[in-house]
Length: 111
Image 1 (cartoon, rainbow, N blue to C red):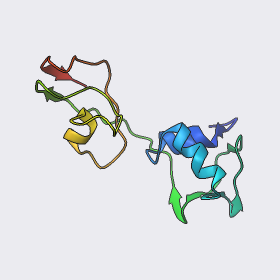
Image 2: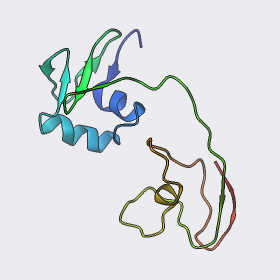
Image 3: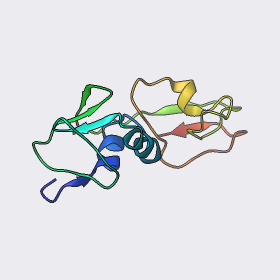
């Protein structure tokens, strides 16, 4: 992170929210960098302290791979409006996304 990371990307990679949701949080004044209210386009440098809603946010440094045997009837989307989506079905406490996808009527291995 020597040249810095855009704030919305930093928040997204920390598993707090998507980049778009992070932009909304920034616009709503919910994000601070080193105690200062953040603005869209801010860059996070090494050593900066980022907070969302008063809670510290740190970039996740480790990769976690989940393997899921997707049953039929579950959609491969993270859209919370889609009933029976794979993200809600798994219920992992941090933000996750699938690599690839399977049709709703298909079953099989999903990463």
